[in-house]
Image (cartoon, rainbow, N blue to C red; front, side, top):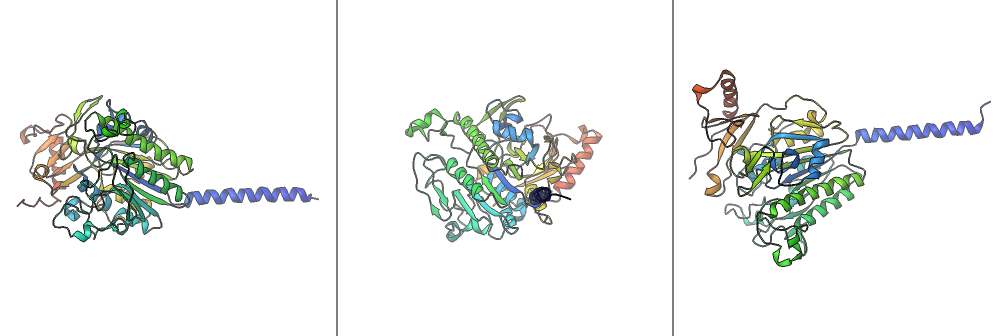
Length: 445
């Protein structure tokens, strides 16, 4: 005869197994958290894992070393073209109207996540109300609800309804948070304020799926001291401009990424969170970075490699089981497509999903990237407007200029038709078909 105590023990063990099974099922079906961090003005060469000898980026290097390091991510050469593109998943010729403006008719990845049950937030740099564009209605410029309309439940942003003339982004910053201006203080540092808000958002939403978009304030000029710089101790020097502070800014950027990664670990949600990091364009033209493959002069605003080649990393411990170096070309439209895939939605963007790369597939997502670049800003900036298609090595401009970027990284010597070998002719033909799909640039007045 079975003892009652034995039955009770068996029942308890049964309940434990059921409980474990339920938790495993819950973890398997729970939607992943997604964090997208976009650094402002840092090229591929700026990270240690990509060869930088000038700056230390241990936190980003660690994410890349344990996740995916994308070594051929191609952005537009300037901030707003890249930001409108990544947020909407569309090529610029379809929806880019003015520099520093995002048209109200557009749907962003914020809307995408919000419509599918996610809590959403944006922190960092906005600069999408067209504050200095005369064609933009003043009501739009003054509208501090626009982040909500683009799918973000909450925000903590610089340059939403006021230009930097009213307050910069670093020491004594002018930050708008959910409809109100924060009190200013010379001892406060903009990147700390917005990243602290990001941490608070993570803590408040750790029990439900969330999407956090963090277009960083760093490392855009002015190049000034950070709280880790010795000069910060003197309030009079906190806006002292010098290229020497770029190193401090890069390393503070890395520190903030580490801060977010550590918070995910502390909250026990690291495994189920996808972190993606990317640059919006190349490094400032006034800076030279020493790397293990030679000095690299920044080319922000220009369509040469150093203007469009940006760092890109993905970390998602529960999905990315082994470190991956992915050398296929990637376009910023691919983020929207990837997020659509994660949400099990059809892809209505111009991009291609990257999710199979996370799971270990070595198949290239795309063979080429095409950039339509018409910044519509100043004469100095617009002089580099251009359209090109490229693969990992070759680039073809719509005007017919064809470059071998491996042997001519600065694009000083276009390849001549008579000198092309059979393979190069085939590559040029392939790129020509791609670039022909894009309309020509409008003629400037």
